Length: 282
Ligand SMILES: [Zn+2]
Image (cartoon, rainbow, N blue to C red; front, side):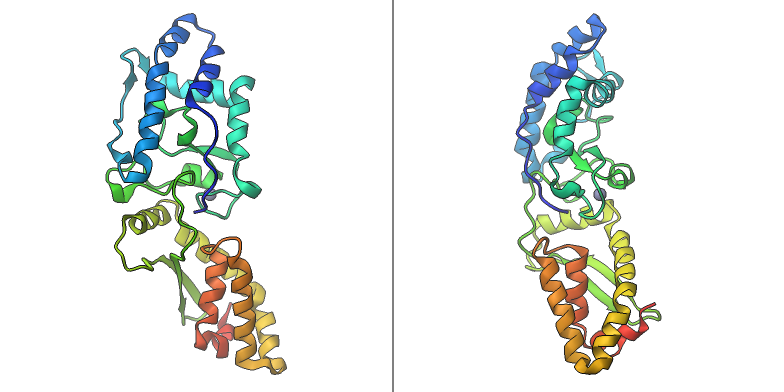
């Protein structure tokens, strides 16, 4: 997960623009009457997100007694994604991820917006900007949890959680044939802090263990010959280790917890890999 800047965009502006292009006068009036509830929902979300309280936000199947979930979902799909006036806000949020990198997995390209709390259960958050996170398609559709039920099951939120200043991703080198690696989340501080439980939940919910292991396997295949040449051309174990350490340092600058940074660091710290193990890469 990578942190990104919280959007400077009020829910009231997006909601009002989306509602203004609703054709049915009856629906437009019923939605307009919800304006205050939308601002309240934004305020509640902001107040609860970093306090482990987001799971206490009420799910509902109707807003203000007379607007259905489906009508709110259509407001997002038809008036924010599908109408030029709402689309301006949609595109602004989409472009807020640096380098177009999905902040949820930190690997694939942004192509859509993900509702942190799903609009099907939390309709009044359908077009609230702080509930809309730029994401890749896989993270958007493949999330394994629907909504949080406790503080520990609240996945990370890129606008609010700042977790990049310490390493929480760890690598195990498996002495299998061919060699493989396993990523896991570690509580580096041994603190039992809630944030590590949430990082674990995030890692699981977005299938990052498998994504990173697959990418690492490709990376390993790509450097096998390079490592063999460094070792056999006279630099030996220290040469291989130095190359891996330099690679880890270089990749840590952008993101301390990128799968690449953690891969190279983990390989450099494994004496078996640096002496012999690299020859067992597939
Ligand atoms: Zn993603």
